[in-house]
Length: 172
Image 1 (cartoon, rainbow, N blue to C red):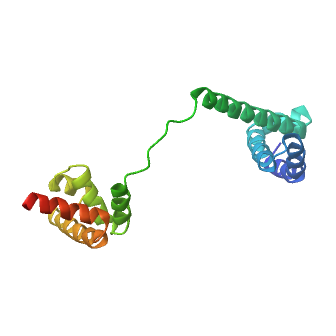
Image 2: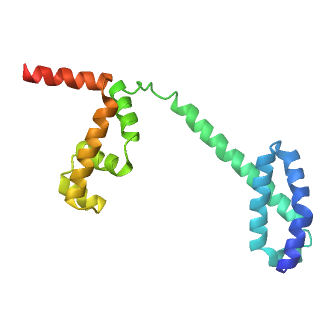
Image 3: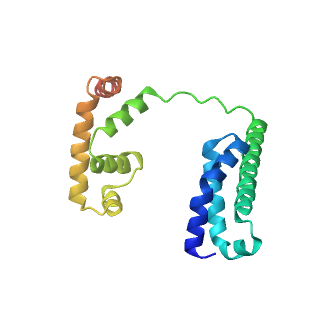
């Protein structure tokens, strides 16, 4: 089957096959997916489709097998999940973590990256500069500006009050 013949075959039978697989599977999106995948495979075997004389039946059979295969994978995954039991309870994130993440999202990406690499990943300024491909002076500026921006954003939040209390205890 040449390209033009295959295109005509596709145009003439794709809609009908989707309708048939929809009736078989009960899921239109699934029917569309498996029919499309079956046509991809038919394209790869188009030389043999002529010899068989029933290319539409071939595509329908492949599509049906793909649908069954998907169902089996889903069933296996569900069975595996059931055997694992319920997931463990995960405590909610700490309020300070949430405040910090929200604040970090509000500063420019370059400043955020520098702050995370330096303060959370414990990289030295020169290491941050090497990883971000920036001069050391630029990283220092990003850190300074980023910390200033975070201080403004976090002013009068629980995170700021905690930091102020900690500083007062250190001084006292």
